[in-house]
Length: 295
Image (spheres, rainbow, N blue to C red):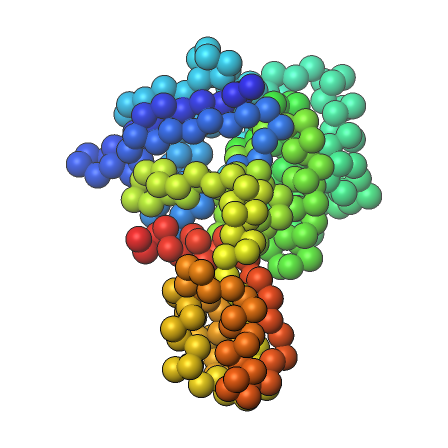
């Protein structure tokens, strides 16, 4: 079931369209990565969906009704904190702004601190938190009121590898009962956790990818050949439809129609090319992303 739907979403600033005719269908317990270069309109889109700025045109619906903003949890790219506060104080503020009762806030605060791995840090001031801890606290406030939908703007962009892994593990757990839309520049994370990827360019959605289906379709198209000596490309070029010479001893490419992997290996044997590795290689989401953006 579609839990969040945007149709023709547009945001103009004077004559400039930051987002134009953007469409989105986010289903229950689905995770979508919003990809695109700087200036593609990702943050503006998330701000419109979260209700922080009004769209110039278009509609945002949930279950075919006007979206109730209470169902949204939002984490901005640069969440603001009061360094003198303790985590429980910060969540008390977040819960109060969400209209929660004091009793519910007290119970829920401990729950979300445990979920985000911050329970033991509840007596530390936020000013002493690392970047990863602050990002997890930002997630805690986003899920404080138990929203059905999470909108996250670059949740891992400023984190070191350990912090990024922590946050991604939390998102993996949250997607079991929430719908998640998050923007990111870390395409590997999108591949690992997301069901679909939506690529934006110049304010428009230009490519929707079902990641599992897309990866399955790519699995046998390209072949990686590593050799013990520099490759004489001239003898192999006729076998490839597309060829990517990554270094003198490594090529990756798509074979021509009716050319089998065995024919390629036989050609290597005829040319006395020592093979260190040969096998199918998947095209990465990063490579596909570059093709879409540059295409």
